[in-house]
Image (cartoon, rainbow, N blue to C red):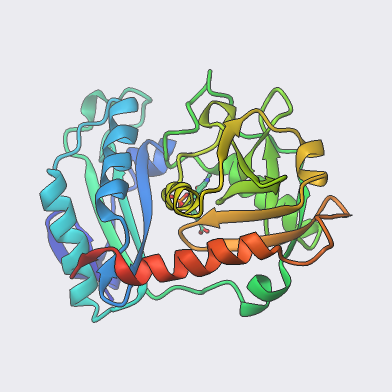
Length: 288
Ligand code: PXG
């Protein structure tokens, strides 16, 4: 496998970064997870824009332009002979010294990994997920705005471990006020009385690229959308529920905290969002 690392395409065994890299020492960096479908990169511009916003928010100057990053992402896919897969784009503060101050970090480290993807089993889409709320909360915006897709994912990792302790593949994370924020690596939606609801970014939801695609589908299907403060009660009493994410795409949820959502089977409207999303990834995208 060829990895892009700081201007070169190197073998995986040679893709090494310094132990003094502040991405490793402090989680000081930003990243994107991107999908490649049938030789087209899905919503690449949107991913690069979010990366730019994340970098700006943490005062990290990206060393490459949007066009340069876009070309590198595509070239990494080509060099690995991929037509479908998962791309991880990472920019860290770079090599510095042992100290919090990034003053010694002169060159951000840029890494692009393009690999095949281990998809959720088909059963998840046919039968739906059984998920739980976990104790670990979404990061408080006063500490670090959760809209920043930073390399600090420790609380999400802990939440995912707590989910697996309950045999659940995903978990609902609440914010510090007890409102539903999102899942550990996915946004969450519910349908009730013909309306589509999802937590507002101010509740700790990442502005997901798949979430945005679902907003577009809702517009096309004439389903009104509400972004707001939602509680676990809202989700327990919803008619339908689904998650969205680059890896998961659109996946139904049929049980939350032991309570059946609707009739306990994937909802009919959810299925339309799944079908429309699958259609969209074939039509849209930046061709390699
Ligand atoms: N919320 C969080 C916290 C995320 O990290 C999403 C929502 C969905 O956003 P997109 O843009 O993908 O629709 C994400 C992104 C994994 C994995 O291995 C997934 C993400 C990040 C890191 C790893 O499943 N999802």
